[in-house]
Image 1 (cartoon, rainbow, N blue to C red):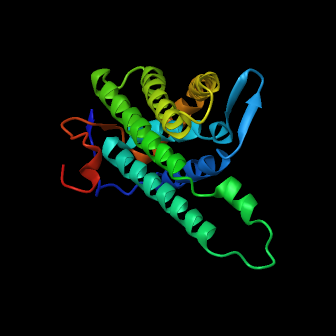
Image 2 (image 1 turned 60 degrees about the vertical axis):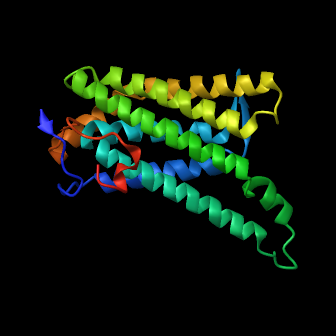
Image 3 (image 1 turned 180 degrees about the vertical axis):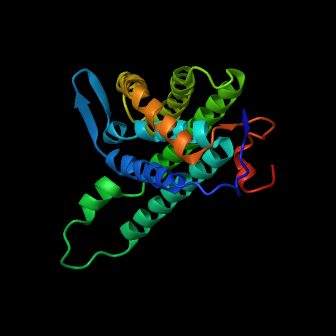
Length: 233
């Protein structure tokens, strides 16, 4: 087993690309979440179409580069989402041009709703870190075998935490309980299903990265403190 590389070591060619895609998926999903969709027997927000990819990227990052680098990406996404929310809010409260008639439409779709933003950030934090920690620990325990068990198992937990926190914090008391439960179940099934369907592609990407980056991190003897990125572990 190869020891986990230091966060300052390594000159990885694809790490920054994956991090950029991860953040892009996260931000686009947040914007798309302003629309509630009804598709076949499922009811979910529009961001659900793309958001599961963030967990796939998270699995790939943790599996290949290790928890500590994955933690860096999670915090980068958190900061980007917070910045986007603040900018949208500032734009909302600034006075519109006198001949611009779309202020109400802007507020309806992109308006800063503190409860929604809080729900999104809490859900993202809980889900993303749960996913990364579980996958990292399982890799060491399973000695690198059975990647599909780690990716699917960690996602089932992470997506469950993410979906439950977001829906309950954002919508509890504002939607009928029956609709709220339907949204939670639909989101969870859809997100988890995407992870399962993408497992063969995840295998290919992980294999490609391990070969070309020449890294296969095993997180032995590390701290899983999510705030360790800001303070010494």
